[in-house]
Structures are given as C-alpha cells and as structure tokens.
Length: 291
Image (tube, rainbow, N blue to C red; front, side, top):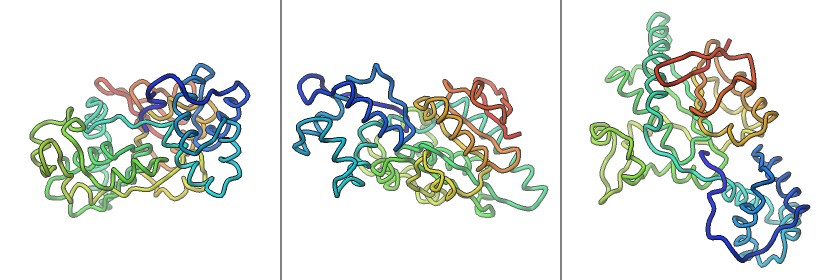
C-alpha cells in the first residue's frame, strides 16, 4: 500500500455531510487503521460517490447502513479498502535502501548462517502492493547467493490488505513502466518478455514469495506471519495516526527475530513512535534494528 486517495474526476455525485464523514472515517479507521484527516473530506466524497451510484444509494447515510447491515457487507468492506488505497510503485524503488538491505542486512545474515550452518532467511514485505517490492527482494537474494541459493531455506511473506493488488501480484506480469527503475541487465536476467512492453517474473524469483491478505489492524492476522529476520514496510505507516503507528511497529517488533532489521519508507521515521529499535545509518538510507 503506497498511496491514499488517488482522486478521479471532480464534480457531481452524492454529497457527504460532516456527520456522515466522521462516521465513515471511523469505519475506515476501524477496518484498516488509516487515519483520514478532516481536509480529506472532499476526496472521500469524490472517491465514493460513483460507488454509491453503482449501488443505487441516495446518501452516505444509506451507504454507512449498507456497510454495517447488508448481507453483502463483507464484500463491500473489501471494496472500501480498494477505494481508499492506491498502489503506485515500481521494481528497485529507493535504491539506497535496497543497497543497505543487500550490503548490510543480508550480508550479516549470510555470514552468521555460514558460521552456524542454519541457512535460513525469512523476510516480511508488509503492504506489498502489486508485488514489485517482494519480487525485488527475491532478485537481490538471487544476486547475493548465486547458485548457492538452492542450499538455503528462504521465504518472503508478502502481505497487503487489498485483494485486488494481491491478485495482480500473484500473476507476476508487469509493464515496462513498473520496470522503469530496474537495471537493464536485471530485466534481461529475471524477466521473460510476454508481448511488447509486458514482462513476466521468472519462476525462480516467484518461488521465494508467498502472498497473503493481512490487515495490519488485525492482531489475529498478524500472528500468521512467520518470525522474520527482516521486515519491509515502506510508505505505509505515513497514513496512520500515532496510536496505530505504535501498534503496527509493535507488531513488527514482536515478529522480528533477535537483532532483526526493519526498513520503513525514506520519509518515515520511528523517532517519536518507539525506542525499541536502534537506527542504523547507511549511505542515503536508514534501517532500524530490534534491540
């Protein structure tokens, strides 16, 4: 999940009152942990009006009642998630972080594993969107381990709240726009051209990645994630209020193995959220280590 409220065309549609906005905002928060600021009221109106018209509902009050009581409420709550999240991302996004992942975190895990004989790497990509991040991490592991990768037990758990983007991710099909920040030799090595401007992720890259629908606001769901050496959650917590940020970062802390690494977005910081991680400075990037 890398964006929020990517708006469509403005004008027309069903108007939302202040009280309706507050009630719908509370439903969104309870469902996803995403905090919608007051200034986003017009974007809520703009984003959801077409949906109300599809359902032939005359007001947001009717829509709120539909979300709470209709026989199709569970399906509609999933649609609600699709409406509030957008998923603009790419392969090899934020290269300094990925270099820190490869040259610091993965190198240390490999060195320790070679000493202990326990060749295992577990990574959690939380808010994985349409799969570009976890597949990127898989490619980096292939590059780091080379032919020895077959000797390792590797699992990248890739989770998102959106069923739609997970469906896209599982297909592993991407346009050249998604590969705009990917080195040409990497594209040639790890992707198969399908048609003009469309590529398929190679099976050996997919093999390391396991997709699952996980709500970061659901403690039961979070317990499904295997303990991890490294957690990636980039450009997600920026949409949470402080209470939700603390809850999610606490879940990452509980999930991580001792001295595990956490990577958040380059514009995100744990400074005011928790003191249970130590900031590690790399060239152009910061990672956080469980203490």
